[in-house]
Image (tube, rainbow, N blue to C red):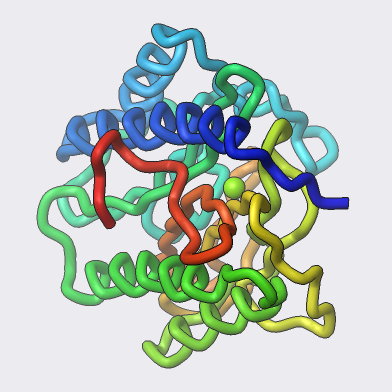
Length: 260
Ligand code: MG
């Protein structure tokens, strides 16, 4: 069962989305060599709390047995780290890339978004990975129209990644979002045997390609959270919360007045 949102519910989701996008923008502005991932986390957390919004990743139970609850407001994943990196004392270096993911709830509805940013000057290949991953999201969003199915989003993401010589992470997927951060349906970034439900106006989805420079295989570090590429090559992540409408889909996790 997928909850379809009314116009007024979508307005509330826009508010949660704007807070999410603005926090990520503040983080982007603070990214430079020498800054720690913990400092970036603090910037996002202070902003979110100052507005009375709730950081949703903090306290999430570890999916791997024996792991601690997630301690951060942000997931910060550097270079070969794909997702779920824990913010802390690590200092960013010139040439790193960092994926920043955040979910919040505000007035009963959720926003979820992720971006990958370059730190200082990065390699051409790293920049291309960041750009292709971002475009994978937009290709997926273009397919998120009334009457299509989830698999149409998956196919669009996968084709764009593979056409550019990159691979798509299998183990982690996008998702429905609304009153809860993780709702049905699952949105794989690759084609599976499941076509998934048909899309209807008012459905709200978090489309989030996780794209690897090398192989798609992953492993999880000893902290039980951080997911890294099995071959140690780079990974990028880009996510927005979107709404399916009667016409074109639109992005909920955007800055006030932002045009994509
Ligand atoms: Mg998400």
